[in-house]
Image 1 (cartoon, one colour):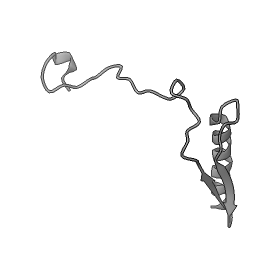
Image 2: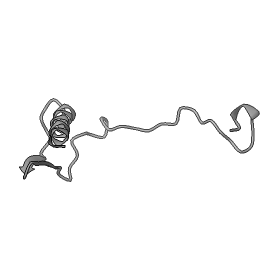
Image 3: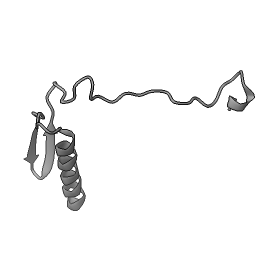
Length: 72
């Protein structure tokens, strides 16, 4: 079980480092409490409005009415 937590902690540290951007703007903290890694983020995000993810609908399949090819 300890190996699982150690692996998860290492993976989280890599993810935080990879997502922090090139300028190192992440201002959160990583600390250890009795062998448990605690990651604290600030209220301010690292990404700018142009960097953030967007969800766009590409295709909708399944309709109650309409074209039979799209009825599900």
